[in-house]
Image (cartoon, rainbow, N blue to C red; front, top):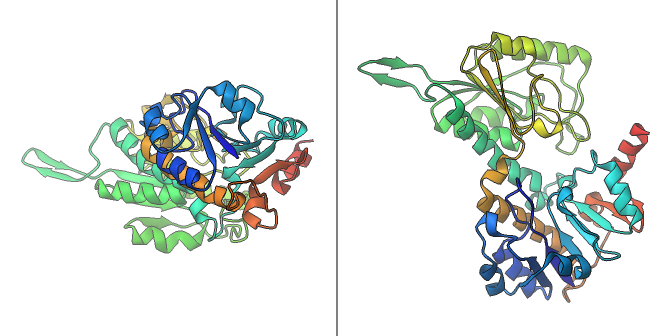
Length: 375
């Protein structure tokens, strides 16, 4: 079997396989073909791949011959893979249902790693978590750079500087890493999340948990956020407004699979924030958590900088690629047999849950559900 690794296009800087993972696949009796320069932006030279046993090929050779094609961004698949090929990456199938149908019609088997079930057994394959960890860390560093004041408290002969007040909306993987990083920088941190179950973890990191009672039960949502009632949303807005107007930094991470990101920070809240404050919106790619968010841009409103950036993991491409490719390797072990051949075992809940198209059809229940709603 041939696994082909395509070169991602700017602004993406990561690569689907790093050399050490390519070497592990070669030991599993798999041929690994890497497009020339695929690892350059992640600081992995072509020679490192050839030293690992991979072969450097042109994009045309990879499209024509690879049995399994690795490409993180669906927009970076620029040509037709060979008939019956398997495509694997982060394809946001709940938003890209038309593309998924096109790929199904062409007979490709598609695995979107952002749909891996969030179970204990799948943790080592969870690309959302591995990349969100980096995004949460980078979000705080970006906020500290954009912010016009200090993060930590300083007591000097010229006077005292109060510590920055940071409000984090969402205590998932990105939010928890943001808490830890902001605390290390000396900020006072408050955290809002609709899931009471995360309160203990938030407090263990030294942050204060902001609670709003009556949230919908998310325990059966597979680790993802769920839609809340209108009454809860109203009380949520009031509580967030109360804390937002005291915050110097807000980091928002709230997304709901297949839906536009909820607006948590309204125009009225931003109008009440003091000039020089910063909002880092990690949900920008799905619309953002503010009324003003634009993905890939910094918008100024009333002296408040609103930074829309859903690609912060790509600003640490070496480590982000390493973690992502380890996730990929752990998943590939489920579908590659001891002879290095493909074995798609749909009795495995992880394989089944991650597969979007197979045999000319869309087979993922969540994607089918989204297509039914949209039609």
